[in-house]
Image (cartoon, rainbow, N blue to C red):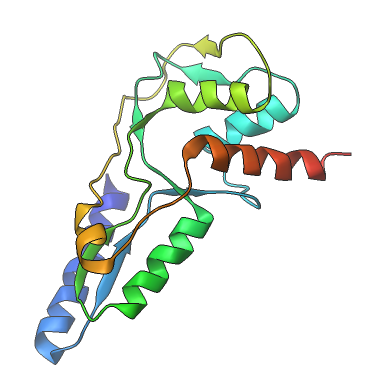
Length: 165
């Protein structure tokens, strides 16, 4: 996508600067960050908002699209790791697991204590998978995500429910 191309271009400029100036630089690639306080309209928070209202999450298509997730406290931990280590480079930060859109919807139903299946609608967008390895961040930064998806989604749902009148 154009969005992805601009991100890569920025990383290329950063690495060129590091080479020319002999500077230490770190670029962190963070996927969908979630947790209490999130208001971004994408699959995970949309599903949690739906179940908080007692509704079933809606999946477009088969729900097989893969996404990376990163709990907000793990994002902060990853940034702290990057600041603490004397390394340069580009690092992916995520929880290290592949999550399908269907899994996100099912977990939302589970943490809300609702039965049934997600609602399905016709796919309107092309299928896209977004999953990246965090092996380099583990090895060179000492990054170790600690929040499991189910637990993080339960915390975000509790936050949503605490805000409802």
